[in-house]
Length: 274
Length: 311
Image (cartoon, rainbow over the protein chains, first blue to last red):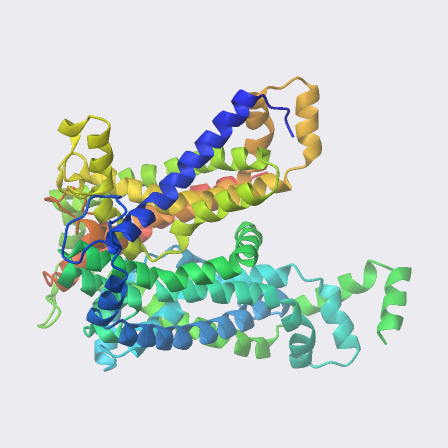
């Protein structure tokens, strides 16, 4: 640690506090606004004289958030486990087994890491229309599995590449079948990798906006983020209700992040840099 | 069994593994395709195939319902000749400054400052707080900042409080300031990600390097340039890649806060693709822009990645 003078320490803390303030102030402004008198136009960041906690209840019912949360949970349940399982299997095979054309397969998947969702949304719309899935939750779940897959495979492969090949050989010598080797040895060692992936995929599904906006008309069948977009369209002028509603939809993402914060940040660092 | 294996290995630590590796390379494991098939199948069906369709659509004039008419290179030419399409691409490049350059720069500063703190409540709080915007839905970020920038919002409130009343405006409706204002939302979202990743990278730099630099009498700035920056090469590449993609492919924040307006001042390719397909039914034009955007991202990311691999 550098020996620092008092002046240096004050500057350092000052800059950091300013950046922290920048990160948190928009949320604080939303919070005080959400507590203002319904229908009023409050000023940016003012603690209301008498906070209207009831606004959260009103936003909850007028946006039909119960249906939205249920819908989001269905979408998350449809996307996350399936994607994590498929990505783990593929990542394992590409790292540890000798997959024919493995390099080509992996190369194609890596290209997918950079593809913007918008570049695919037009054909996806017409494809899902011809499959008769447009408007249903499958129209969000199925493409999302495909779109998240490159990152999942990339992430899990990076993990399995870090495993000693000797481990697999030892199991083979012991007479374990390929499946047993995976199930008993590799999978338990991969717990932190796939669980971090699951958290990332939860956030990606929960926060997904473009797919629901385009592929599902009925806001109550969208993700919460997609539904909030519709809510903004309807109540855009009622700042108080809009802020209350937005805070409600942020809450699950925030809670999940704070719970997994430590593992999450650690996994992100390990995974991203590999 | 394992004991035997381990003993063998300790007698001859290199040979057995080499043999296994070489023989494994010769025999392709066709059964392993089963492991890859579901993942690759979903990817092929919902990413690769639509991408090829986009390329195909881009050579047609199609309203999404009637028959498609071959349009040759018209849609492609339009990207370079129609001002609103060209501008949307320009804006995407300007957003790189906000989504990528500023967050990486400020992230370096923040990470360097947090590193000097003693580990404890304040450094954890700083890290967590800076990271929060990254985990929230971008839709919510858009709504929060739309409120910040509105006539009654906090930005104007602060300006009034410090006596700069005449500079207050509806920021997102202002022809000059709308794009930078949207850009600042990008800084807000990306700063925490860059800080946390760079901080992790700094943690991995050998402390001896810092000691050596100090023994050589290096000042803070020199130490930063000689030790921290080179040590962070891989993290910088990851940060830049991630944020540049986010800049070029931005959609959520802009769709929520300005929808490309006022006029075309904040129009970006993502929003333009959405409008062309779903509001104006110019599917061919939208597809050409989509393929162009995808290619653009690849062309820009490629050299950044190469830079990371050189050692």
